[in-house]
Length: 358
Image (cartoon, rainbow, N blue to C red):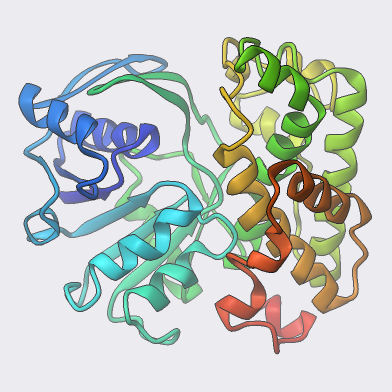
């Protein structure tokens, strides 16, 4: 299959490696402001991986020309932080062909709908099959240009939903050779709520703010950053997320339970389970607070959850407090910025029952 990956960060590079390692013809694209990894992959003709998956996989194109990157692509992966979804959508606006399939991974609170709007497609237009996953399928870091260290490839527990949902099963079949453990979600609203990063990253980052600034992130994010008290903060956020799902009639699995299904964690609790999780061992903290753990996971993730909760009548005092705390520390107003909300996605007028069938 001819596959294009948009996004050459750690996640996109790993998706490109894994698909190529399974025998697919893979092209890798990123914008010109991110040249280093793209140039190295082009120079060495592929990607090196070590860890849970390893080896070298050839990439037939690595560059900044979007037309060349998507030429003949049957499947396009959009892989990157939430703020990259709309720019990638705009880059392919008017260039997608009928019958192509696009997967946004991770969906990051409405990624599929955000991409569809940016690409100039109507919400009910299914000439392009579109889906999103609730999380990236790997715990991974880009350790140098052209080389990734994969701490874990998920064993289970990554949900995928198509928009519209009738395409979910056929898209899962399309990627089954590379991702046999990918599971169908009830809807894109379930993939939006199941994403764990907004539950974990802001809580741990804010509780360790002085340590991050004082050491430049010279400590282990999970093994040293998640004390029992920090675990209680994560749990409070998780409970509010689960309550949103309950109001919508959508099952949202607790983060420790999902972590066990995925292979990250060995126990279902919010303290030692994070510190001892095989999938988190050796992962260092971010070097500064100005990082996606706050900018993305608060600005896109928690703000979306807070607005959605308000829309359907669910209280989220802990989530709201974290948004305010992060805003003060970062000297910006994440709530007012409203990067991705029910309003920006065009679903603010829907009732709980209408949202549940998206």
